[in-house]
Length: 241
Image 1 (cartoon, one colour):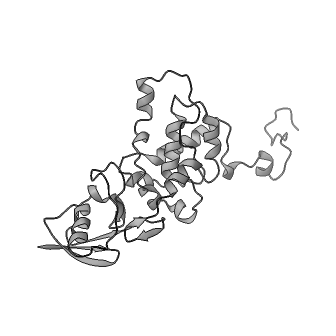
Image 2: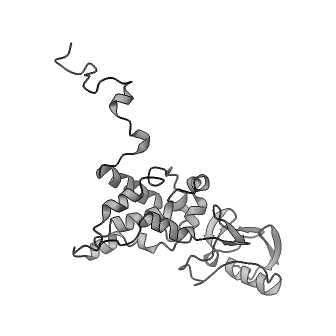
Image 3: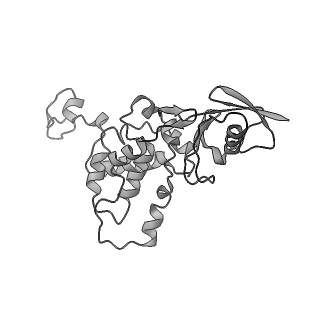
């Protein structure tokens, strides 16, 4: 019995014994289309190289199985397609630099196991770009810092070895934490099960705690109340008339 798989709008028939999508891609390349372009590395869900969209959902090809009937495999969205399933992933370096998601100034703080555990999950990000492919904000604004860069920023802000936290918070205010719609699409497709939406919400809270404002709500009370003097009592001053 054969299953069908559509790759970049071209249909192939595959023996039902081959179920892993990466195995399917390799089989097609070696038997029927040696020009098919795709990427892979570890074959075990660690490197993130083989991220594609399977039936419209971002997945790692090496960890996904073909559906009964017809399966559609496409390149990631929101990134330039070089050929077939290969996309330009240079945004990884650019976004990490933009968000300053690295250790800038090492502190002298003692690092405990609790400190390590606090950022362990965020450290598991494999930079597969699935979150950028699913992100509706990045789709319309390529200046948006984006999901994995923000969760990496959170990882370093919470790193007890890092003492330069202000520069990191500065870096994520424009086209960053306040631009996210908190739709949660990035969290749903993350192969490392990182709750990126929750990390961004925490970054928003950290920003407010450190004196930053959501630009959407940054108008002063004067503006909000039609230009009245900020000393006006609005009827709440017991000494007012």
